[in-house]
Image 1 (tube, rainbow, N blue to C red):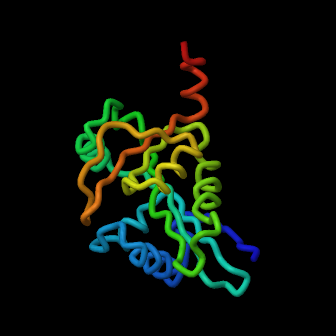
Image 2 (image 1 turned 90 degrees about the horizontal axis):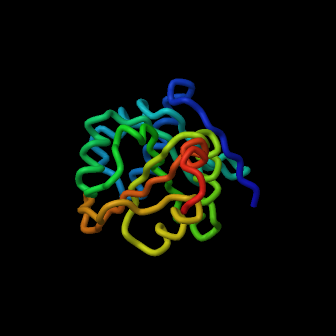
Length: 173
């Protein structure tokens, strides 16, 4: 099945599209739904992945979170990287249950990261093998220690250096 991805600024989205995005993120059960609508409107870019019939199949976002939020996440993870060096967060990558298992998360992540190729990006994800493999496939590395998420699961902070940052550091010695 062919899926179509579109990436927009939240300000360019209809209220219906924003509500649809929010519903799918809430169904993913990985974020606090309180205040989510506003956080979605504050995101930098939203990706909508749709089936040929227009049904929303998956979503993802690039966020530019406030410094206090970044500080909190990096502190909880006991990260050894500076939060101010990671202004972009990849998040809300959710694929609807009927469409899972088709590597659509990889497509969503790939399309979003193409927009911020030269920027350092962080993400948090559940401490599980599938997420760790996906993060690793896109150049993310765990940093710090797992920390308590909203539910009964641990979260891991993942960091990915932008192409320019990695080039400046040069090859490993």
